[in-house]
Image (spheres, helix red, strand yellow):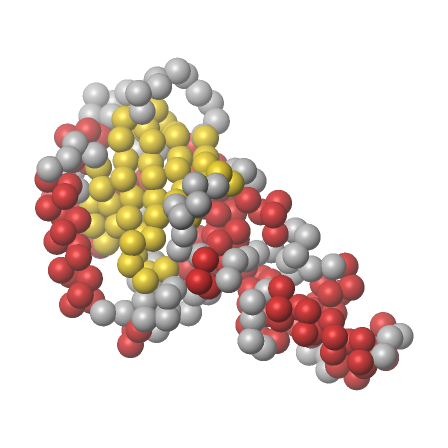
Length: 250
């Protein structure tokens, strides 16, 4: 599953996002970027594309200024100067981060920031260590992550590295999350609950599942209730979608 497919599982609807309001907020980000030497960017999760990139990307990393000004039409151009090995690792870590976030209740999903240390080409065509920090700054009307803000700087630590570093932390509590966030999602469902969810996914009704697993329908329904509770879902369809996002069905 790609990052874009994970984002689309948010199921953000156009009536739930206010682009007139975001246009004003984006201008605030633009003004902030002019007062800082950091490189700022925003990602629109609803449209699955970059939304803004500051002019500092041209000075620091040698990007084309005219392309930066129209980044919403340029795909993933900001990632083109990331070291190829690091880019692959970053995408996988972003997917694991999304799986971790979607395993949480909706009200807790926007409390986390994700920081990377990786290698990028600078304006002199040299690979340097950079730190990129990303967090949600704008939600839709239902509290779903809509706009992500990124801030990138040259790292003060230029010790040669061959592997990307990743840290996730809770902005409210300061808790540091281990980089392999997906490990925290593996034990969400018991073996029996996962088995039942897979059968639900295949279209089996509760009475059919009870017959197939040789258990009572009462037991099946109890498992279904536990599955919904653990996956923070209101119905079986939401549970299946949530399980797919965090990798419990594959």
